Image (cartoon, rainbow, N blue to C red; front, side, top):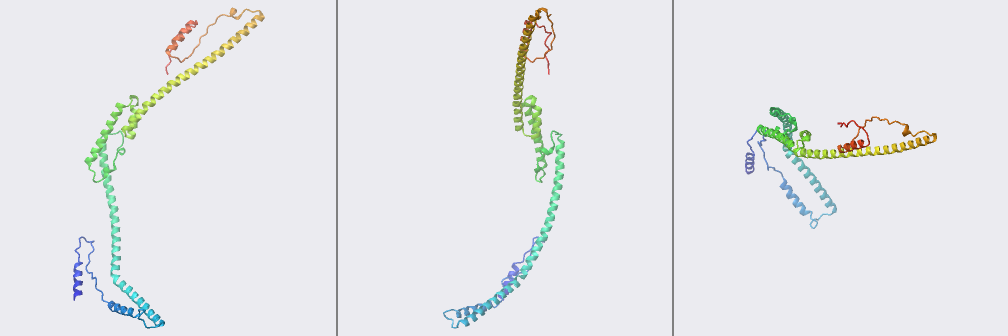
Amino acid sequence: MAKKKIAEEMENATEIVPINPLELRVTKNVVGILETNIEQLEAYVTKKLEEYNPESYFGDADMAKKDRAELNNAKKVLSQARINLMRELMRPYSDFETRCKNLEKMIDGASAKLDEIVKVRDEEEKTKKKIRITEIWNSRNFTLFPMERVFNPKWLNKTCKESDIIAEIDAGIARVYDDLKKIEKYAEPCDVDTVKAYYLDCLDIGDSLDYGEQLAKNRKIVQQEAAEREEREHNEIVERQRKSEYWENINREHNENLADLASAALDLPKESEQKKTVYKEYTVTISATEEQVNRLKSAMTALGIAYKGFVELTF
């Protein structure tokens, strides 16, 4: 009677009111009731173990072997009986576990399908929200670059409010205009457009101003190199002229000496006495400073060379 009462109390204690249709509810579960002859077996084995004590065993070796075989066989029988009984006792729980696992797989399948639905719906909402954000961007009439250049993926999150997105867009556009003004203020006038184009490519005012500063430095280096190259090329031309004039003078003196020798041999008047002065016109393009040109004019006048005037060429 006591065992029956305990079983009823345990059964009542395991009843659970389900919270939702998928909550597992135990309707009957009897635990702790198993009637066997295990107590008799324990008493029998305990008694036999006393008989098989080496100090009190009276049988010979053959008798001991026979008793040992009986005990080993009894152990096998007991072990198999235990295994069979446990398997039988656990069958309801094994079946219950299998059915639960099958239900869990079914739920996982349904959950996976719902997950796909969630992704599709979220993507649809994000697409609608991006269309709305694009409308906001276009309403600002800002055409220096497309919205994708400054688009923030967090704007598509449900937690991101439209008012916050508008504030960020307006602040970003204002910052661009402010940065362009800084470029106009700090960059060299001849570099403003180039630096602005660089800024619109990187959208980094610090990097852009550094770029403008480097442009100014490079321009000075280029101008210095051009001046040095012009002077170097001018000096090279002058040096070639000196060498050319030197050899022209050598050849002229040589020819004059030959002519004098020939005249003396033939008793002819000297060429200077019979030759009439002939003036020719020459056109020469020179590269010189204004001071050098003035000195050249003075030298030509001193040599009796007539000139019509110097025209400055522009390239």
